Image (tube, rainbow, N blue to C red; front, side, top):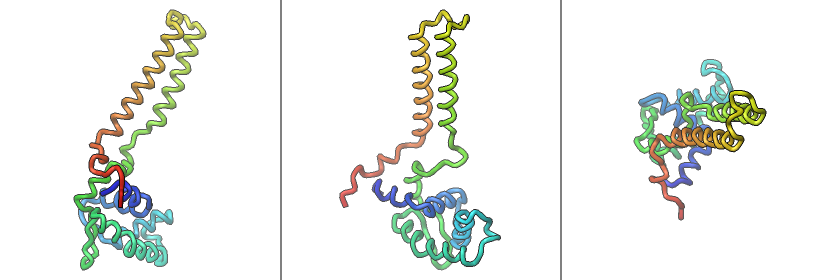
Length: 175
């Protein structure tokens, strides 16, 4: 699967939702149930409160457009006789690009807190606060830089805890 194909697949919110939903529900799922979940999500309502029109509109799109695209890429398997859909083994190739949901760390908050703490620390050193007065300004600056470098390293290691999918993707799609 080329990188362009992965990005094309994930460029559509319905396909992302489908893949996430199937990932969360280990095993086959009824296509109509999945379409109703998408419709409820898009309309900010519950499945029970969906109108027939909302449900049918999404089902037709999912059935005619998104299922064939995901089947053709080998990411899902669809049994038209039973109406059941499930992730194929190949779906693991794009997991790296899928949002982690609740497992996602709020890195932006960590950086913001570090920035505030670093600014307060550096200001205290520059102002000559008694406990910190012995630290030269240059050393305080180095401490701040090292703190950001350590946080950046932790962020990098966390993001790359899954084996890079790029190894399985061609760098250029020449077709």
